[in-house]
Every structure is written in C-alpha cells, then in structure tokens.
Image (tube, rainbow, N blue to C red):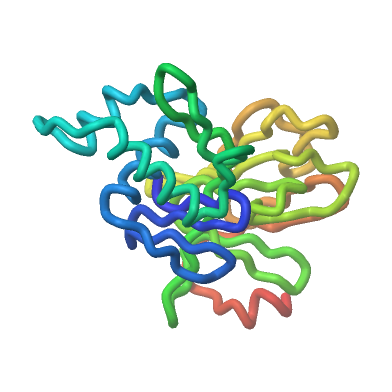
Length: 216
C-alpha cells in the first residue's frame, strides 16, 4: 500500500501524509498509524486489543486513548462519528475502515518519463509500477464516463517483470488486440485495448517523447 484515495482524501504511506481536498491534514504520528492499519486491514475489523498492541506496545493505555485517536482521524478525514462513512465502530470489539479506497498512481517527478504509459487520443497517461484502475469510478487512473463501462472495469498491473491487464468481471468486457479477455492478459508494446467506447494504446520503453506520442 502506497497511495490510496477515498472520498476527498489522499493517503500516502511513502510520504507519511494525508490530504483532504488538496490540503494536508494535521495528524499525529499515532493517528496516522491507526489510519494506516485500518486501511491495510479493510474491510476487516481490527480489535481494540490488537490496535493497542500496535500503537502502544508493552504499554498500558486506557480505552480513552484509542478513542481519542479515532476521533482525531475522523476529524482529519471529515468523517462524522454519529453517522460514520469511513471509520466504523464495531461495538464491543474495535474499529474498521468501511469506506471505498482505490489505489492512486504517483505522478512522475519533473523531467521523468515513465517506462509504461497509455495513449488515449491526445492524452498520455503514465503507468508507474503498481495497480491502476480503469472504469467509471472517480478514483480510476482511466476514468471513462460511459454506461458501457463498469464502475471498476479493469486494472493494469505494472511490475519490473512485465505488464498485465485484468478484466474485473465487467459486463461488456475488455478487449486486447481485438479479443475479449478472461481474467489477466500480458501486454506488449503497442497493444490496443478497447474498453467500452474508448480505444487505448499501451506503450513501454523510454525512447519516445510524450509530445511525439500525443501527436502520433
């Protein structure tokens, strides 16, 4: 887990930051760790005993200590304790992250050209290592607002060992080189991918500039 988007928040475990509507949230170190544990465990609930051990190892802390951290997390991410959408209280047990979180790609650094990318008309979409969602979901790397596209339609998985696309059980299917795929399919440079009404072209390698590609 590196970067996750949920609601109007972005969680980044690498930079140790949480932002909301583009503004950094003020979270204590332990509150950040609590949110991190709940996100890692989602949707499974984590017991108060396990959270106490993770946050205060070998130290006795009253129950109010954990409750204060939960309140701090909720205030930072805009969750309402009376009607929580993100951090759910499991009475008599512990807490769970109940919101929907999707992976968010890390933007390339200035001057950096990603090894893998998608061409969508005039757009060039970087695909760094990791998983990248395609669908109608607002948090998708490739967000396609079409009734022919499922909310979570497919995902690209980019690793040092190769790149794949996986259909996520979409209703209308994902097509690679004109063939509907079932499950995952390994990708090669230049592969054309059809998702609903959108044709994407997968590119890998660093030899072509984005300006050249966008105009090709």
